Amino acid sequence: MHDTVLTQHENTSLHWRIFCQCAENRNVIFYYEGYFSQAIIAAVSDAVKMRTEHVGAANTTRRKLFSSFIEMTQNIIHYSVDAYVTRNDQAFNNEVRHGSICISTQGGHFYLHCANPVNAAVAHQLQQKLEHLRSLTIDDIKREYKKTLRSETPDDSKGAGLGLLTVARDASAPLEFDFTPIENSEHMLFYLKATI
Image (cartoon, rainbow, N blue to C red; front, side, top):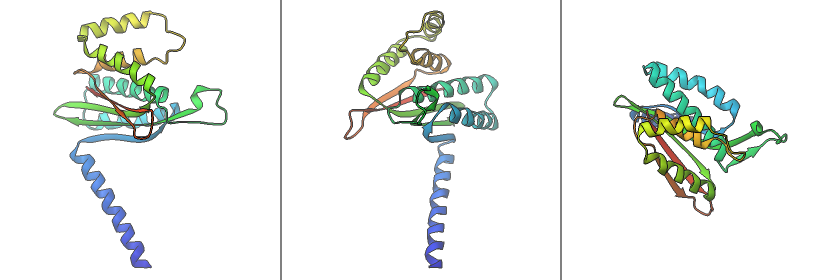
C-alpha cells in the first residue's frame, strides 16, 4: 500500500514538473483557467502586476498589459455562457463565469490569450466588431475610442465595444481571434489574442 501511494505521489510530481517545464519553455508568466468574478479578477490582478514587474516589463508596457488583462477578463464575465449564479442573483456581481487567460512573453513582446464559450448571437456580434477593428489603423482606433467614450452607452451594452477598443488601442499588432464550434452544443469557443 505504501509503495502505491509513493508511486502516485511520484507520478503527480512528474506531471507537475512537466507542466512547469512546458510553461517555462513557452515563456508563460501567468495562467488562470476557472471561474471569474469581480473579486477573483481583483485578487489575480495583484499577481499579474507582480509577475509583469518581475520579468522586467517597462512601465508603459505594464500599464497596457494590465489594462488589456482587465478588459479581457471583464469580457469573460460579461459574455461566457458557462455561468454560475449565487443564491442572491439580483446583483450582477454575484455572477461568476468560466474562461481562461494566459500571459506569455517572447522576443520583447507580451501576448495575452483568453478563451471562453459564447452563444452564437454574441459570437456573431464579437466577430463583426473584431473584423472592423482589424480594418482600422492605430490612429483610427484612437479616434473611435475617443468617440465611443463621448457617446451614450446603449442600455443593453455590456461594454465590449469600448473594451475591445481599449485592447486594440494598446496592442502593437492587430488583434487575433477565432470562433470554434463546441461539439454537441450550439455555443462557440471564443479565442482572443493581443500582442503588447
